[in-house]
Length: 304
Image (cartoon, rainbow, N blue to C red):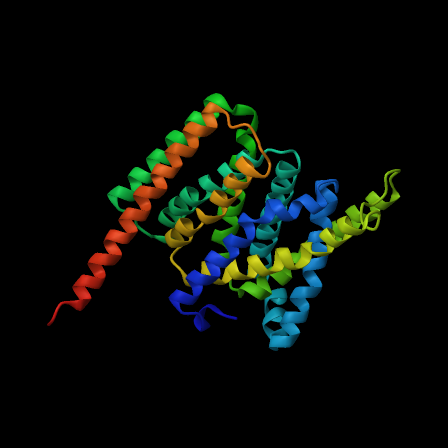
């Protein structure tokens, strides 16, 4: 799968599919709620690698993978992206297990705004006046969160910033979505094995194998990681980064609804203000995208 193979509509479907996976992730994480976040992330990384290698072999992309592994610039960029995604995974899993679901949701609401700004600064993309208003509203929401929910603000900021820079690297690195994820898993492998070995030697031992459903949940970590990340990386390479930022509102909305219903977490006033500000930003951004798309269609439909 390369970005040249993907139409704009297909890339948009990949992006939405990835975020539907991520939005429902808190429900899946209930299976591994008692697994230490570090151990779960280690298993998740370890189990992702054979899936990626199998797909690489099936698609006949071994040469592409070898090229990524032997190119110094590509390896350095993927070293940075692997560190960012490992941090992102650990903080997200820890936040859900600790029942900071709203903080996790807000992190991914902040993420699209960060992505739009990164697209502007690093990729030469442009925001309209209305889109700048959306960014300003989101900033007001984050400021409200900082004033009234300071203890969980770091969760939201780490999640938003780490994944935004991860996506930026994956958009610009000379590696396809599948090969890039495979190299990231290879880079993290020594650290993962060392951590699992250390955990096995401790008094509590490993969570893997102590309970049937829990073990199934750990094993599902591989496909639950590989599938959405491959979809996201493919979408990120084929779509404008500002568009990627827009569709990222899907996942945190699902996470927020789960926090409100399934997890029954109390909503602080500062969090509510932040959500209202960011939802308003989403509405403005959505209106601007729709307005421009409609104007473009009407212009195309005009007889010459």
